[in-house]
Length: 243
Length: 243
DNA sequence: AGGTTTAATTGGTATAGACAACTAGTTCTT
DNA sequence: AAGAACTAGTTGTCTATACCAATTAAACCT
Image 1 (cartoon, each protein chain N blue to C red):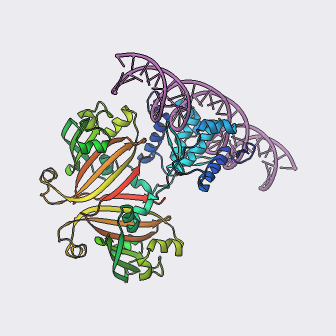
Image 2: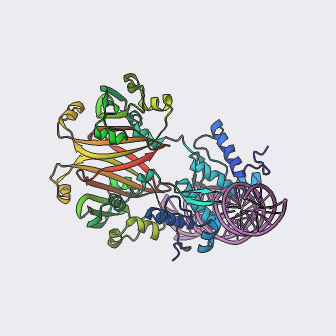
């Protein structure tokens, strides 16, 4: 019942943070709602109040909550920078657009890194990397082809099974690593014959090339993904706050 | 001697925070410098390490410091105001890529809003709007064509002169409005004949279509811009933090 | 009825200490 | 010479506790 696992390698405050964030995003906690008091969380999960406060403080800094001394802790009014959430996950991205995401695994291999891949992942040439090729579907229709490279020495024990569920979930929950930031480049291009075939378009049709590098807090690269989106079906959206 | 007064009603962590901030702003601590370890602050001022950490954490969140586990706490490099610079200003975007930006004004008109424009700017149809068409240059070469629509009732007194300098600067400095956030959509497309002519490419070449809406804090739309970039010369780049 | 005091509840500040995780050396082993 | 093991020093997480400050409502007085 408790969402908190004290034996997990993931910090307790972070587990609580994600849990509350999830409640807010699922709508079980609505803007203006008051949260149970810190002391209640502490007692309920048998953790220190200071640990609860660490989670709350994070969420306040991120704009999810605000506190009023003597009154309580409340869910903040709608966050504007919602655009930045879920951008690292195709699944979440599609859901937020009201589409049903799907996958079709083309291949799952363990290969030696090429020089390009090695430099993107900050590893050595010929180090082992997982190479995952997928077709991404939205409402059953092909939306993108995606090639993912992940260092096998960093992310151990990856299986086809895990890939079909959620790689991020595996990395965070099972390996206890936290993905911290991502860099993306977006460019316009023309489909080659292989991409055209998978996307059910004709060669030379416009496509959107999105390359994403994700990193841990210390800057270690976690993965390197190249996605080719159908330009007629996909529009990249983002919202940013100033400073 | 000590900057910390434990009997002051001002919280200790805040006193320490201000003290360190002052050192940074006076230049006694320079970007890249390592700070004395937390335990040293604690012992020196006879306060708890957790209190020192509270001050440090604040400063990290505000971008003054960054911590590396096992190494120390460092003064952050000059914060690149990543927020809107790359997003709202072509000029800054090009500079950060090491290119020399330039403009070529095609037209500057005051026109009645079409229904589309009106809805983007949250105004009524036929309300007056400025329409600014420009060619954006990088190192003298055409990089994008840009059409900008701004409500004339909100942003008064716009002139061709101002447009050739900086519209944002005028809005913020002369009108005292603060731009708060922006939303962008990015899509891949094919150049029409007019765009092709201005961009010196052939009709049907791939282009990147970027549409930007900028807003004040209260959600009032400030402008609505459509840019068409040469896909062979422009790559959209963005980094984002999780959490 | 209307103001005052009190108690309970909430978040805010601060302490002291323990152990984990990470970094950068040094030393030991092979 | 190369790698493994150790060590000292740093930030990261967490506990258990204490008291302060602000808010609210109930209890208590005029």
